[in-house]
Length: 330
Picture 1 (cartoon, rainbow, N blue to C red):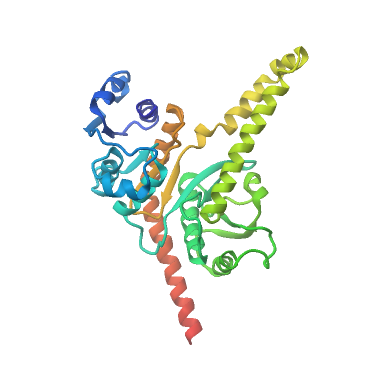
Picture 2: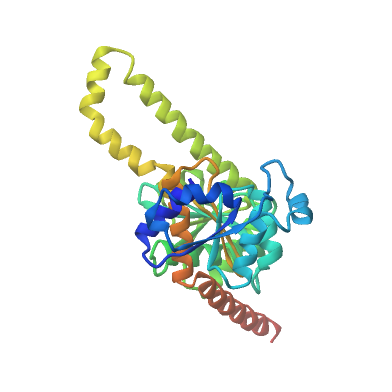
């Protein structure tokens, strides 16, 4: 699916080139099936790989010659604009952070993704990289998420909401309330909506939903599980009787449209925001269509200089923060 995804991505992006790291004996026969990849792929051989069972610390210590580490090194060395991997999430995060380094002003990189909503698509972070966050982390996530929404969704001034247990100002922990106070007074290329609740994610109440990695991962997995549950219920309902099967045939065009709308392959790709380089995590169970989506995500971020956008926004925020501190001191 990696090679097939690269072929699809090449169809969509005519100037795209690839460096593939892995077992050359296994990669080369796969490449021969796709004429479109001829002369645009360079294979770098290594027989070492990060296993799905490897712990991040183990991958960091022992995985210097693995395909994942060499691919990340290519980004750090300027050979590649970004890295896309369907491998071990924890190892990819640890290696990317170690090699690419966090950006100036960013304490912790965050895992960011985009989700289908009633209004279109929304950006959500953190999706699991940081279980515990303070108010500064959440503010940084908001700035990065807004820059991501401007880049990927084309929104000039995206709305940002903090995930909370209620919309009232008095609700929530100190980190969430502290982040809200900072964002309310900041001058940034975003509109701070305030607090949002769990049901606001699917409604698309805000373009960007910001939360800690614990809540974000739980919310994401709940949405994925609910989508699977709904799909199973629908399949059972349409197979219960002859009449229900006839009903399915009549409703099939609408059901196909719904399936296309919520197809996770079209929303694949989690991005580690806050690093000095583009690192994208594809879901390991995706097919070539899903992997091509993740590649396209990396292409868009490189083309629109997402890192430059985040750097400029963080500098603007820092200037505002320093001015506020001087005013308070006076």
